[in-house]
Length: 441
Image 1 (cartoon, helix red, strand yellow):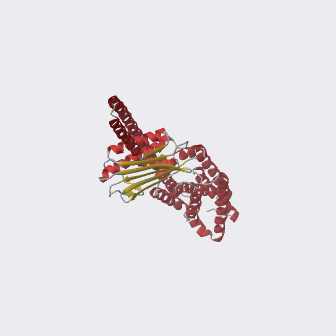
Image 2 (cartoon, one colour; image 1 turned 120 degrees about the vertical axis):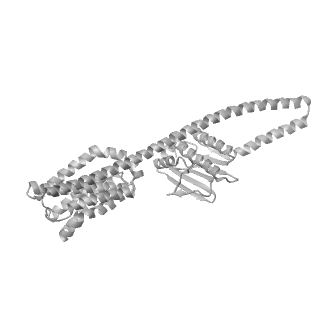
Image 3 (cartoon, helix red, strand yellow; image 1 turned 180 degrees about the vertical axis):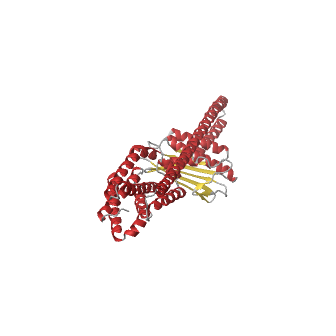
């Protein structure tokens, strides 16, 4: 270190905190409003600069040894609190800021020593120029592609990625920061350059690997949606064909009914006519009783998909109860509702078939509660159903499809998903948030 007064130390610390938090903020999706974020970050930068400056005056040796590593938890805790991204993604951004801080500190000190005889002001000017150049580069070249891929990173980054980045940066930065003779030799400079280069490569590779994994997962979800739509179209075509056959049968039966009624009237046999009419009315009432298990007050698209899968479930001798009450305009696309309902219903049918239970049931409800759409399905399931991390494990025979599609739609609408087993029933509960203003309430 080049030393200096407490004011110089405070300025350096504020500049370092400004770099870390500026990098973090430019790559972040804030949790709070813009004004609150600006005031919060400015207050944190000032308080961090003053606190580290006081530490510099009270115990210069421990400050030199431990202040770099201390900046990670201090800035990390604040950044995680101010961000609505996951903790792993926040740690990645804080690590990137710390890496750049270590880079400008080492560059400022060594450039000042090599070219300006260790001038404090040369060190400060070099740091200011580097900070300005780094922030300008991030704003113009890095920020947009990073934010475009942030959803992929948020879904994929985990503890392994965060620990890998933090450890690699600590090894390189602490090797550069660690106090010692700090002789101006070519070997030392090459060692520092290689350490920073390798840490930068690790950060870049972690970013690219998890970005690629996220995109691959998203493509998998899109592929599942396409397959779901293909299945829906096929089922709707089958339903249309069955409807034509049903209509032809009704016309054929109606002709026979009319001929028989005419014959009863012509022969004057009123008792047989009344008995036949009662029998026919009883048959119609029994059909109406069956339809009472299905109450649908929703869009035609949702109604069609529920009808398609209800018909398919009945073909498998599954008792189906449907309650869909989401009539009116809502700020959720029909295609998203269909993706969720179709995948849930299809998995429910598969679960019933695999249960081998004598009585198989599916209870599907799609209702609205204020500004939420609640989709719930209860179906008979096998006793060996397993959950991993709160999600059903995919079966080897092809069951459990579409879970990624369901999670994607729920995430898009800031919703919630819940999967659990209750007795002999597998329960799926999905909550989707809707815009009250759009819905007209």
